[in-house]
Image 1 (cartoon, helix red, strand yellow):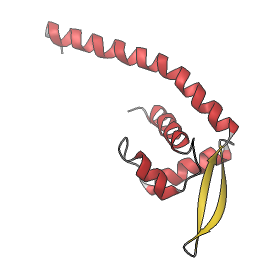
Image 2 (tube, helix red, strand yellow; image 1 turned 60 degrees about the vertical axis):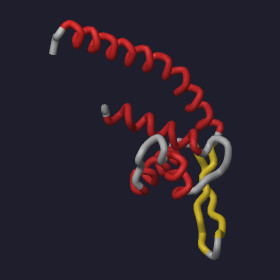
Image 3 (cartoon, helix red, strand yellow; image 1 turned 45 degrees about the horizontal axis):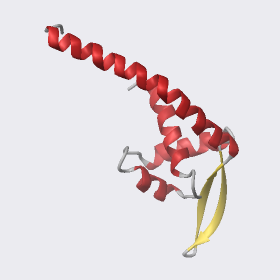
Image 4 (cartoon, one colour; image 1 turned 90 degrees about the horizontal axis):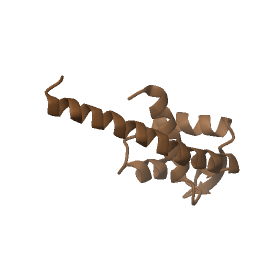
Length: 111
């Protein structure tokens, strides 16, 4: 998959994972596990990028005697999710075209 496309998809996945409630790294990875595999290093790179771009905020809170970072989506992050949903219609149409054309080639015996 194209690296930029994947990056955008993963960024949107993380924003969607924290859309309804604040969350922390391990929980985000667990929430995304049914949909995509993500390492901790990849997640924390994404979280830093989203924080730098103003799409989420971070706060620290004590949990079981340890500090844990909680991430909250901002209005900018919500805007990005709305944009993603709008863009997805175009991406989906393009993917359907590509798949249909490849299936037509398969039926015609074209490699």
